[in-house]
Length: 503
Ligand SMILES: O=C(O)CCC(=O)C(=O)O
Ligand SMILES: [Fe+2]
Image 1 (tube, protein in one colour):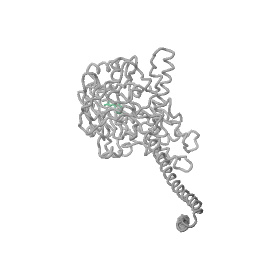
Image 2 (image 1 turned 135 degrees about the vertical axis):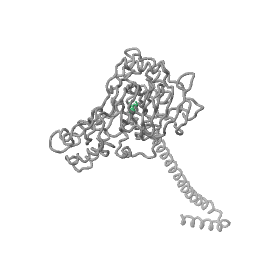
Image 3 (image 1 turned 180 degrees about the horizontal axis):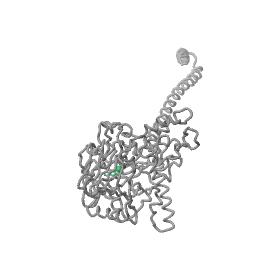
Image 4 (image 1 turned 45 degrees about the vertical axis):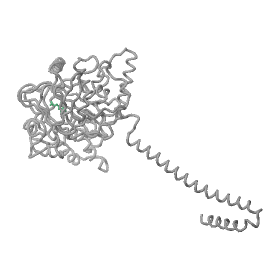
């Protein structure tokens, strides 16, 4: 560059001297100069253009990355076009229930969606919600961890009566899950009366004294009566995978199995109660052709949660539970953490077929109190709004807070059943991108034993798969089946058993 400039300046000087004496040379020199100037200019121009070009390319890449990471795999989940107003605005009641005339919102199934989340603002905050025409309900924030609300008068007296009668008509079945017998020393298997050695031997299919992965998972598929919870199974598999040959000896198995039995079970050294829960329950289908009260309640849940109607419509039926005197259920989570080994029961048609175990995936619980209880029978949230949560904290001075028969009075938050009131809580956190995130450990809850009277409740769960692609695939599958059926039989609804395999 310097050379060019030097040369250019020399040319300029000499052209200045020669100009008067040699008029014929001037045009030639001038042409040379012109060529050199234009070379320099075009290089500079080229550099500038290249810089702009690179900046432009970088901008485009940055923009694409931004769009990708903000929307996730955007073809499946898109934020709702008309985003609902925050429920925290007490001046803006929620919209009226979704249309009741046409059941199964087929068009919704193939649409994208995101999950609305109500705002708690602060404990004790009351907001107005519009669930039925011509009146509003008050919705009070009960806790932020988990995010939970109470809505008095969600059901009328008459509606409570109808749901109880429909459950009686259908018939209730025992839902007791046996734990160890009273007086039996607590050991390492809360739900099995088998020793660790017996479990090991039963799992060791080829009897080579070593457990391989396929042997461990061979008994873990069923949801009820499974010998391990998904969490326990995961702990054992993690330990197995950490070993060089991916096999567990009896001693290895003993170490990991004995500590995998959850809080309060080994550490408390207490005797366990006879049952994890004792009550009776039934399921009531809420779709097309169901009793209008059940149908209306489901639409009210759509209005309250502001979740896509398709999600609510494809969720489990209403579970109605009856607790008689002395009945209870120990503290539990209604939903499950998502692991690579698990698949959601509700989407298993579209889910991971190689998953080892099925779990309930319930984003929201809406619990209806269908009766008031004369004495006790509260719903308890032992760790609600604790500042920190540690599983070990559930065992205090040898007292297990998950054991509601023994420790109901110690729960952080207890709700007295009042007929017509609904509780809504989120079993999962948000993933920050509009979808369901991790299990909220603070949603742990149970039921204190009923001392006097009868307690009737109903659970309306909204099922969501943590993998939104699976959820979307499942909904598409349902839509296709529905469309092909309605092509054959005009507007015949799909029966629930065709959509779900969970009953
Ligand atoms: O009965 C209650 O208070 C709550 C019921 C419950 O937690 C359940 O059924 O999962
Ligand atoms: Fe529950």
